[in-house]
Image 1: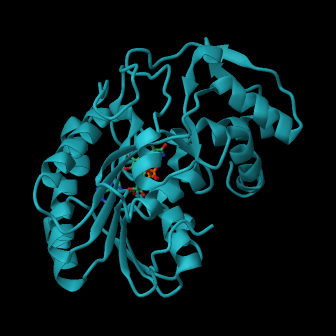
Image 2: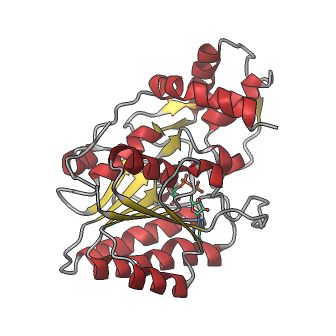
Image 3: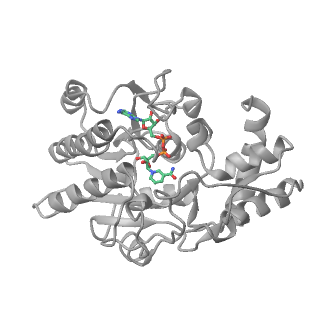
Length: 335
Ligand SMILES: NC(=O)c1ccc[n+]([C@@H]2O[C@H](COP(=O)([O-])OP(=O)(O)OC[C@H]3O[C@@H](n4cnc5c(N)ncnc54)[C@H](O)[C@@H]3O)[C@@H](O)[C@H]2O)c1
């Protein structure tokens, strides 16, 4: 579905992190609706390198881009020379900045701040020179221990959440200047949907539970899961928010969720009912207590008001639409 009257044909669009989950979905949105848009993807793509938590350093995967007809650049957003080349050789109209260390459990604070915060500011400077509107990914992890999910009440409890607060601070600082561009930060809540599979253990519990159930296993939930509630949002609504953020009534930082908190038990119940398999539920200890969010629910009043954003998917509908892809992945990718 088209979410705006803006004609992106013949516009030059940079998508950083475009080989990842959200970035690749954005790339296909533009390709499908605006075949004459010039889409450039910058992503570091995966190799075998891992962080100290054992997870991959980059989740970008070529399979997220099968069928993509635009340009792909493999490179590191921290590479100043690469950014200079981008500045010189292109003239961007829009920049969607999704590249980041997206793994909330990464311990390397130095690389986290460099990649998520400092590289963002470098990119902003290019956007200002090019007169390109910017939409970047912030996160609900900025709220951490807060019990108020409204911009201004952030309380991050890990380095990742902190890095996203610092991005929002930079944004607010730049917005005080007299700029010709719009800058919108989107605090995504828990996103699920097609093209997240290659995030491995950091993909949503929707696809992970889906595959446990298809394997014939009993889904493993953290103890007290009926009281762990999150705002789970389907990828299509995240794309809507990104597109509407290209033409905001007001630049700034906005929540992107459904406005409704649902439990991890709900996910398992909906999946088992859609898959027509009942394996019951098993409970395990939560190893992340201390840096774990037990409740999130986006206040989306400002997002509705200033971006004209209206979430379209209840969790039941999002999971139902996702089921054929969960089954395909299980057949073709799950080892
Ligand atoms: N998926 C969610 O639920 C969620 C929630 C809140 C915020 N976010 C944010 O949204 C954005 C997109 O997340 P995603 O879920 O698509 O994650 P993802 O890991 O699939 O995508 C991020 C992409 O950035 C690339 N990347 C990482 N480091 C890079 C670097 N140094 N240089 C260039 N590219 C680099 C990765 O290869 C990957 O393809 C991220 O900024 C993430 O922090 C995601």
